[in-house]
Image (cartoon, rainbow, N blue to C red; front, top):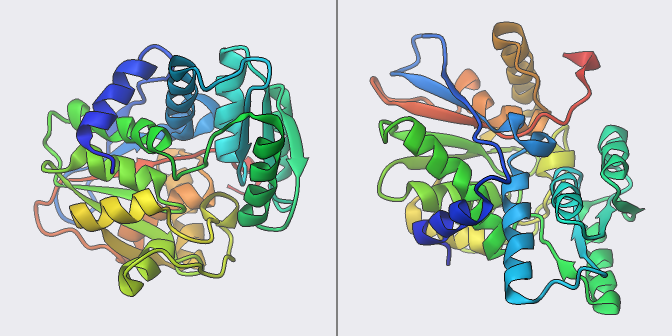
Length: 311
């Protein structure tokens, strides 16, 4: 179980290795009280995932788990692979990244630019994950899960503790996209007792929503325009446990809402994010989440690894 203490420990460990990303106020638009964007798309590799990757690698090195000659293995739709490849290069160890055949070419090219060995396998994240686990068993590499490992979740949560610090605790609700749930869980642990968390996911990949309804993580079909970044087949065990403990609310948005929110972020603020990252703002823009009058809302924009040609 991940708590604020785990997030605080991760913050100390990764200090100096990740960016402190900015927060800026949204323009007033009549939807409740003050609002802010937390710009995690400006993190190393373009997503919050660098936080968890660095924390996992440094933790493994501290414990003696990491063989620097063998390095790490990760399965990813793209963003976790980028983060772990970046961390591996920063600390001088090899990285092998398993991605589905559907991973965007821009992400595959970027992985290779970080020096990672890229293995494309299967059409979904889950298939790449199974192949990655076989590689770990064969080589003894350190496995870096995309979202369901304590160090990964705690590292992701540092974006939340940093946000709360930047706002001096003056935030009521943090809205965040959900795929496998590592970011949501880390943020919820960091914000426990300070702010509520709203997890937003595409209606085509309702991992959290379904788990909360069914009483535990279950597989869901994966489809839609955000599947490359939010395409986990089920919510992580850590994420589910933290969501239940902290009372995370799950809301769903349609693909059309993601398209509209991504376009609005560009047109209004010149923010270029991927479809998955637009989910958090889509909850507000579409009305899927309606803040109460005066409610102070922060929207975490988590990733910018997108093709800018269609913005």
